[in-house]
Length: 329
Image: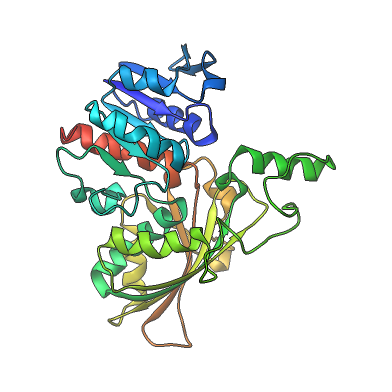
């Protein structure tokens, strides 16, 4: 089938193409699309060169799927055009996530939200995806009452410009700044833009998207997003308060048996999840699993995953796989 990747020359777009190859998605024709300045460039797919086209040309090609990673503005402008042409759009931006009639999907958790005829499917925020992968089986068993989250996010979440800034700083080179401050040998509690209530847009995504994916608007959520000088994945310290009492061994079993999640937790051998472990992998790693001794029915978790793969590209391709398998396109 024809598949378009919009934003094909960006960090996530290139990874989407790589994941399509790795997972042997049945692509008969890849249509890489990007901004006008990238039109005519070549990317490689399954060992063959493919020319980048304009987004308008990609719409005209009528692909079955168009997987977007080109920012919210591009998605708002172009996703409806693809959808009106019969294409299923899987969008990695924030543009459609909280729209009432747009499914926000992590396939292992809520693929049932996708119905035949849906033409825009939203891919959640990277930090949300890895967290709900660990939390979904626990919510089903014990019901989550409240989440207190601190994320420690890779510069790759900001994009190529941020990675280059960090590399330049490490090399002592003055270059273009993606952030207001130096990121190498530094961290700052700022992801996205600040809202009037003092929270950032990245923190708000963790609040709103978690409730939508887990299909429970009663979950209380508070979050702090921190950018750190790391590539390879986002890390999260999550404190979970449940409605019901839990058994710690059962918690480990529920998390470890959930598809795509690995319990990596042996303090005696200094085994705990780290971005260097998750880099270029699709699994969500969970460790430091322990009861919160300061409060009843509370649990602490440390969750790490590659934000470019499961947090973006792989999840999007998995959505396409599910829809192709169920013939929902």
